[in-house]
Length: 496
Image (cartoon, rainbow, N blue to C red; front, side, top):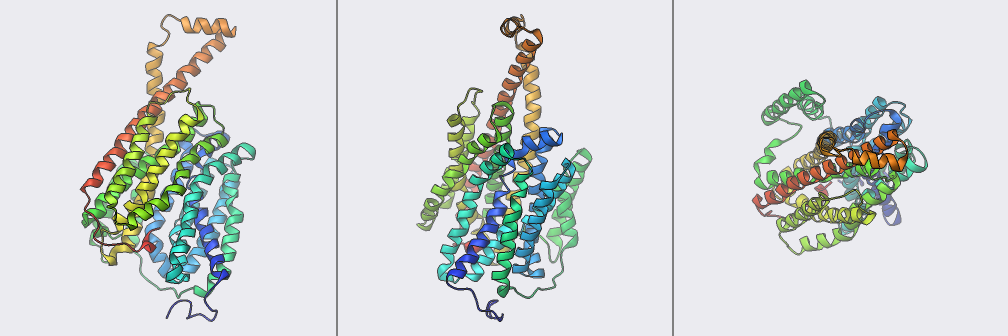
């Protein structure tokens, strides 16, 4: 007996079915929006709360890591509390945590609130699609999934623009407070519409030790001693999960070459792409004179092509095109545009910056859909849920790690490049002398010269990182050649 027919209230039909789909998609929109809305706000948040730019990126990484930890638990939480209750409570808690983020008076409180927000947001994306497929008849599932997918494509475009406008015209707090009314509407509407579908919870044991080891491995990366803890936690996690009877993460799926290679490509490509999405607004606002709003406008181009290209990619794959070829093309496109960005200059125009971002977004769209199908098409049917969870976990974790590494590399690179420039610039003092004459003040001349050195050092460091990330992404393109062609079609209801 289905969940719907086991309840007193009849299943949704007609217009009300599509109303439910809209609100489920709104929940998905909310979760995806918060992956990008804070990117352009980092400089503003760091400045207002009195922390460095490096610390400011914790607003992004704390959310990503917390979300990554919750992804493997979604299946267990669904069984324990029921799909409808889990989704509704996740939306409600997301709204509460967003309110706490917006009301934070210190950076430490904001980071803690972002961790809680990430944990609340973890189940929203997969559960929104799961519930959508549960309430719709099979003949309408494709259309409903299409509506859901639109929110996944539009949110990354809207996020940077909305975040920039909130920072420039209001305050950074509204980057998070704007979630609250959306969360309230989604929570109330989804409960009223979907409570008829709620299923009975099941009491299942959880692999507590596996969860503890997973958390230690993922989150222990602050200082050297914790790095050692993280490494030890990782190996302990591997040993425990491979030997436990009911592991929280079934690592045995990595025995499939397609799954392992596909995830390697996913981690290298998505980690690099996400890191660049964090670096770009920091560079634009810190050294190119962009406001948060205009940085958002520039960043939005990486999502515009997704809306246009995604349907074309789906048609190609339906016609039987080898997904490895599509993946290779997409990753090469991302790598090529990243290499192009490594020769940037400080006098670039808006379109000099926006068009390569458009190309990177196109590559990501071409890459992401087939890599998902290849990864899930490489495992057995009974392993699909576990494989999907681990794929999403690795994708989210790759973004968090990429953000941390590129931010540290950027700050260190600027210091290194500036030291080199100081050693070779203006040994005879001619530039200082010229600035002195132009500005009429020696202090102003020295300050102007220092700014020139800093901006050029930033540009050189940014270009060096672009080239390095380009190499990493190119390795991802090559690695997909080692994967076998998937032997079966995948039920996309497992794709979150």
